Length: 92
Image (tube, rainbow, N blue to C red):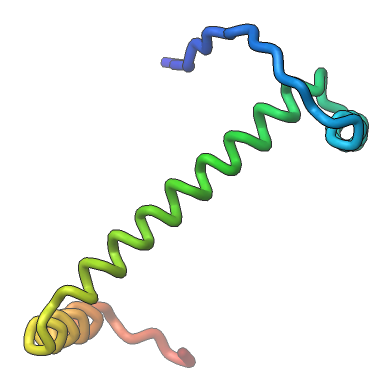
């Protein structure tokens, strides 16, 4: 079964500097993209994914920063126990 995402396109108009337009066109040619809009969409999607990744990293960091030392030690011990359950590979 093949599933896909249907994207609805919304036409919007934005004013960009000539340098930005030239840059986008240069990237389009280099990537052999079908349009500058496709290049801009890709750039924006990458920025969005990076922001989401950074948000998750902050949440994880905040969580572990909020733990008491005893909780951190307990988690470390559980981690060592879990790793010890895997068979040791020779030469590693």
